[in-house]
Length: 260
Image (cartoon, rainbow, N blue to C red):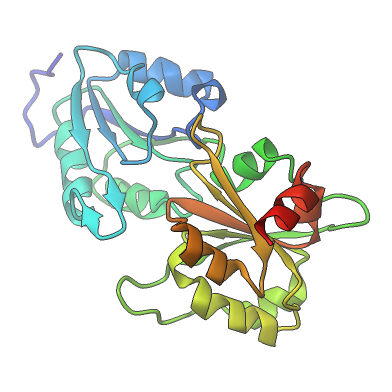
Protein backbone atom coordinates (compact mmCIF):
# COMPACT_ATOMS: atom_id res chain seq x y z
CA UNK A 1 0.00 0.00 0.00
CA UNK A 2 1.40 3.39 -0.95
CA UNK A 3 2.29 5.72 1.91
CA UNK A 4 0.44 9.04 2.01
CA UNK A 5 3.50 11.09 2.94
CA UNK A 6 5.13 13.28 0.33
CA UNK A 7 7.38 11.52 -2.23
CA UNK A 8 10.36 13.61 -1.11
CA UNK A 9 10.30 12.04 2.36
CA UNK A 10 11.99 8.64 2.51
CA UNK A 11 9.69 6.39 4.54
CA UNK A 12 10.44 2.90 3.28
CA UNK A 13 13.33 0.53 3.50
CA UNK A 14 15.29 -1.27 0.81
CA UNK A 15 16.32 -4.86 1.45
CA UNK A 16 19.22 -6.12 -0.66
CA UNK A 17 18.34 -9.81 -0.72
CA UNK A 18 20.51 -12.61 -2.07
CA UNK A 19 18.41 -15.12 -4.00
CA UNK A 20 21.12 -17.76 -3.97
CA UNK A 21 22.27 -19.77 -7.00
CA UNK A 22 18.88 -21.02 -8.20
CA UNK A 23 17.66 -23.96 -6.16
CA UNK A 24 14.72 -22.53 -4.15
CA UNK A 25 15.64 -24.87 -1.30
CA UNK A 26 18.77 -22.78 -0.75
CA UNK A 27 16.86 -19.50 -0.45
CA UNK A 28 16.83 -18.10 3.10
CA UNK A 29 13.68 -18.00 5.24
CA UNK A 30 14.23 -14.28 5.79
CA UNK A 31 14.39 -13.66 2.06
CA UNK A 32 11.20 -15.65 1.48
CA UNK A 33 9.38 -13.71 4.19
CA UNK A 34 10.41 -10.39 2.66
CA UNK A 35 9.22 -11.44 -0.80
CA UNK A 36 5.85 -12.37 0.66
CA UNK A 37 5.59 -8.95 2.34
CA UNK A 38 7.13 -6.78 -0.37
CA UNK A 39 5.42 -3.82 -1.99
CA UNK A 40 7.99 -3.69 -4.80
CA UNK A 41 10.55 -6.25 -6.00
CA UNK A 42 13.37 -5.21 -8.33
CA UNK A 43 14.98 -8.45 -9.52
CA UNK A 44 17.94 -9.69 -11.55
CA UNK A 45 17.93 -11.91 -14.63
CA UNK A 46 19.55 -14.89 -12.90
CA UNK A 47 16.91 -15.20 -10.18
CA UNK A 48 15.13 -18.54 -10.76
CA UNK A 49 11.43 -18.81 -11.52
CA UNK A 50 10.59 -20.83 -8.37
CA UNK A 51 11.96 -17.97 -6.25
CA UNK A 52 10.12 -15.32 -8.28
CA UNK A 53 6.95 -17.33 -7.63
CA UNK A 54 7.33 -16.50 -3.92
CA UNK A 55 6.75 -12.78 -4.55
CA UNK A 56 3.62 -11.22 -3.10
CA UNK A 57 1.06 -11.31 -5.96
CA UNK A 58 0.13 -7.70 -5.20
CA UNK A 59 3.72 -6.46 -5.38
CA UNK A 60 5.03 -4.41 -8.28
CA UNK A 61 7.70 -6.32 -10.19
CA UNK A 62 10.54 -4.57 -11.99
CA UNK A 63 13.04 -6.55 -14.06
CA UNK A 64 16.51 -5.03 -13.79
CA UNK A 65 18.53 -8.07 -14.82
CA UNK A 66 21.92 -7.81 -16.43
CA UNK A 67 23.29 -10.42 -18.81
CA UNK A 68 26.30 -10.26 -21.08
CA UNK A 69 25.44 -7.84 -23.90
CA UNK A 70 21.84 -7.36 -22.68
CA UNK A 71 21.29 -4.87 -19.88
CA UNK A 72 17.63 -4.38 -19.04
CA UNK A 73 18.36 -1.25 -16.99
CA UNK A 74 21.56 0.77 -16.53
CA UNK A 75 22.90 0.57 -12.97
CA UNK A 76 22.14 4.26 -12.39
CA UNK A 77 18.52 3.74 -13.43
CA UNK A 78 18.18 0.76 -11.11
CA UNK A 79 19.42 2.79 -8.15
CA UNK A 80 17.11 5.66 -9.07
CA UNK A 81 14.12 3.29 -9.09
CA UNK A 82 15.06 1.90 -5.67
CA UNK A 83 15.23 5.40 -4.22
CA UNK A 84 11.93 6.47 -5.77
CA UNK A 85 10.10 3.32 -4.66
CA UNK A 86 11.46 3.61 -1.10
CA UNK A 87 10.02 7.13 -0.97
CA UNK A 88 6.60 5.72 -1.78
CA UNK A 89 6.44 2.19 -0.32
CA UNK A 90 7.38 0.57 2.97
CA UNK A 91 9.13 -2.61 1.79
CA UNK A 92 11.25 -2.57 -1.34
CA UNK A 93 13.21 -5.73 -2.13
CA UNK A 94 16.21 -5.66 -4.42
CA UNK A 95 16.48 -9.33 -5.32
CA UNK A 96 19.93 -10.26 -6.55
CA UNK A 97 21.29 -13.58 -7.76
CA UNK A 98 23.69 -15.31 -5.39
CA UNK A 99 24.87 -13.01 -2.62
CA UNK A 100 24.53 -9.20 -2.89
CA UNK A 101 28.09 -8.63 -1.73
CA UNK A 102 29.86 -11.22 -3.90
CA UNK A 103 30.38 -9.71 -7.38
CA UNK A 104 26.80 -8.44 -7.27
CA UNK A 105 27.32 -4.66 -7.04
CA UNK A 106 25.44 -4.74 -3.78
CA UNK A 107 28.05 -2.56 -2.14
CA UNK A 108 27.53 0.14 -4.78
CA UNK A 109 23.77 0.04 -4.42
CA UNK A 110 24.02 0.18 -0.63
CA UNK A 111 26.30 3.23 -0.78
CA UNK A 112 24.00 5.06 -3.22
CA UNK A 113 20.94 4.34 -1.10
CA UNK A 114 22.67 5.48 2.07
CA UNK A 115 23.75 8.68 0.32
CA UNK A 116 20.06 9.31 -0.44
CA UNK A 117 19.18 8.66 3.22
CA UNK A 118 17.30 5.48 2.38
CA UNK A 119 17.42 2.79 5.11
CA UNK A 120 19.07 -0.39 3.84
CA UNK A 121 19.30 -3.92 5.17
CA UNK A 122 21.38 -6.72 3.69
CA UNK A 123 20.05 -10.28 3.56
CA UNK A 124 22.89 -12.60 2.49
CA UNK A 125 22.43 -15.39 -0.02
CA UNK A 126 24.45 -18.50 -0.87
CA UNK A 127 26.89 -17.62 -3.60
CA UNK A 128 27.25 -19.87 -6.64
CA UNK A 129 30.99 -20.23 -6.03
CA UNK A 130 30.20 -22.33 -2.96
CA UNK A 131 26.93 -23.97 -3.98
CA UNK A 132 27.67 -25.05 -7.56
CA UNK A 133 30.84 -27.05 -6.81
CA UNK A 134 29.12 -28.59 -3.77
CA UNK A 135 26.31 -29.85 -6.00
CA UNK A 136 29.00 -31.40 -8.22
CA UNK A 137 30.74 -33.11 -5.32
CA UNK A 138 33.75 -30.78 -5.53
CA UNK A 139 34.91 -29.45 -2.13
CA UNK A 140 36.76 -26.16 -2.38
CA UNK A 141 39.09 -27.27 0.40
CA UNK A 142 40.01 -30.82 1.35
CA UNK A 143 42.88 -32.23 3.35
CA UNK A 144 45.61 -33.38 1.01
CA UNK A 145 44.25 -31.33 -1.90
CA UNK A 146 43.70 -27.72 -0.89
CA UNK A 147 43.76 -25.59 2.25
CA UNK A 148 42.92 -22.30 0.52
CA UNK A 149 40.37 -20.93 -1.94
CA UNK A 150 40.23 -17.62 -3.77
CA UNK A 151 37.13 -16.05 -5.29
CA UNK A 152 37.84 -13.78 -8.25
CA UNK A 153 35.93 -12.20 -11.10
CA UNK A 154 36.95 -13.07 -14.63
CA UNK A 155 34.79 -10.35 -16.19
CA UNK A 156 36.50 -7.02 -15.70
CA UNK A 157 35.59 -5.12 -18.85
CA UNK A 158 32.89 -5.47 -21.45
CA UNK A 159 33.99 -5.89 -25.04
CA UNK A 160 37.73 -5.47 -24.46
CA UNK A 161 39.66 -7.41 -21.86
CA UNK A 162 41.83 -5.12 -19.74
CA UNK A 163 42.91 -7.25 -16.78
CA UNK A 164 43.36 -5.67 -13.36
CA UNK A 165 43.47 -8.97 -11.47
CA UNK A 166 47.00 -10.20 -10.81
CA UNK A 167 46.38 -13.71 -12.07
CA UNK A 168 50.00 -14.75 -11.71
CA UNK A 169 50.02 -13.83 -8.02
CA UNK A 170 46.71 -15.63 -7.48
CA UNK A 171 48.07 -18.74 -9.19
CA UNK A 172 50.98 -18.76 -6.75
CA UNK A 173 48.96 -17.90 -3.65
CA UNK A 174 45.91 -20.16 -3.65
CA UNK A 175 45.35 -23.86 -4.23
CA UNK A 176 41.73 -23.53 -5.42
CA UNK A 177 40.50 -20.76 -7.70
CA UNK A 178 36.82 -19.97 -8.10
CA UNK A 179 36.38 -17.74 -11.14
CA UNK A 180 33.06 -15.98 -11.63
CA UNK A 181 31.94 -14.73 -15.05
CA UNK A 182 35.14 -15.82 -16.73
CA UNK A 183 34.07 -18.25 -19.46
CA UNK A 184 34.48 -15.73 -22.29
CA UNK A 185 37.87 -14.62 -21.01
CA UNK A 186 39.47 -18.02 -20.41
CA UNK A 187 41.76 -17.62 -23.47
CA UNK A 188 43.27 -14.55 -21.76
CA UNK A 189 43.17 -15.80 -18.18
CA UNK A 190 44.75 -19.24 -18.61
CA UNK A 191 48.09 -18.07 -20.07
CA UNK A 192 48.51 -15.81 -17.04
CA UNK A 193 47.75 -18.67 -14.66
CA UNK A 194 50.36 -20.77 -16.47
CA UNK A 195 52.84 -17.90 -16.23
CA UNK A 196 52.13 -17.88 -12.49
CA UNK A 197 53.24 -21.47 -12.10
CA UNK A 198 50.21 -23.64 -12.79
CA UNK A 199 50.66 -26.43 -15.32
CA UNK A 200 48.61 -27.40 -18.35
CA UNK A 201 47.41 -30.57 -16.57
CA UNK A 202 45.88 -28.54 -13.71
CA UNK A 203 42.23 -29.69 -13.49
CA UNK A 204 39.39 -27.26 -14.18
CA UNK A 205 35.62 -27.67 -13.94
CA UNK A 206 33.11 -25.35 -15.58
CA UNK A 207 29.64 -25.37 -14.02
CA UNK A 208 26.66 -23.78 -15.78
CA UNK A 209 23.35 -23.06 -14.04
CA UNK A 210 24.71 -24.50 -10.80
CA UNK A 211 22.15 -26.11 -8.41
CA UNK A 212 19.33 -25.91 -11.00
CA UNK A 213 17.70 -28.92 -12.67
CA UNK A 214 19.48 -28.09 -15.93
CA UNK A 215 22.94 -27.82 -14.35
CA UNK A 216 25.74 -28.64 -16.81
CA UNK A 217 29.40 -29.46 -16.20
CA UNK A 218 32.46 -29.50 -18.40
CA UNK A 219 35.69 -31.01 -17.08
CA UNK A 220 39.19 -30.66 -18.43
CA UNK A 221 42.53 -29.09 -17.66
CA UNK A 222 44.15 -25.74 -18.36
CA UNK A 223 45.68 -27.16 -21.51
CA UNK A 224 42.49 -28.27 -23.21
CA UNK A 225 39.49 -26.50 -21.63
CA UNK A 226 39.35 -23.65 -24.17
CA UNK A 227 39.15 -26.14 -27.02
CA UNK A 228 36.45 -28.08 -25.17
CA UNK A 229 34.42 -24.90 -24.66
CA UNK A 230 34.62 -24.11 -28.35
CA UNK A 231 33.80 -27.68 -29.38
CA UNK A 232 30.77 -28.02 -27.10
CA UNK A 233 29.45 -24.47 -27.23
CA UNK A 234 29.57 -24.31 -23.44
CA UNK A 235 28.48 -20.80 -22.46
CA UNK A 236 27.70 -18.47 -19.57
CA UNK A 237 26.32 -18.16 -16.99
CA UNK A 238 28.92 -20.41 -15.44
CA UNK A 239 31.74 -20.48 -12.94
CA UNK A 240 35.14 -22.15 -13.15
CA UNK A 241 36.84 -24.17 -10.43
CA UNK A 242 40.61 -24.55 -10.89
CA UNK A 243 42.75 -26.87 -8.80
CA UNK A 244 43.32 -30.43 -7.67
CA UNK A 245 40.01 -30.49 -5.78
CA UNK A 246 38.32 -30.99 -9.17
CA UNK A 247 39.76 -34.52 -9.10
CA UNK A 248 37.32 -35.26 -6.26
CA UNK A 249 34.37 -34.89 -8.62
CA UNK A 250 32.68 -38.32 -8.38
CA UNK A 251 32.91 -38.84 -12.14
CA UNK A 252 36.10 -36.93 -12.84
CA UNK A 253 38.12 -39.79 -14.35
CA UNK A 254 35.17 -41.19 -16.30
CA UNK A 255 34.10 -37.88 -17.81
CA UNK A 256 37.63 -36.79 -18.57
CA UNK A 257 38.54 -40.04 -20.35
CA UNK A 258 35.24 -40.10 -22.22
CA UNK A 259 35.82 -36.56 -23.46
CA UNK A 260 39.27 -37.55 -24.67
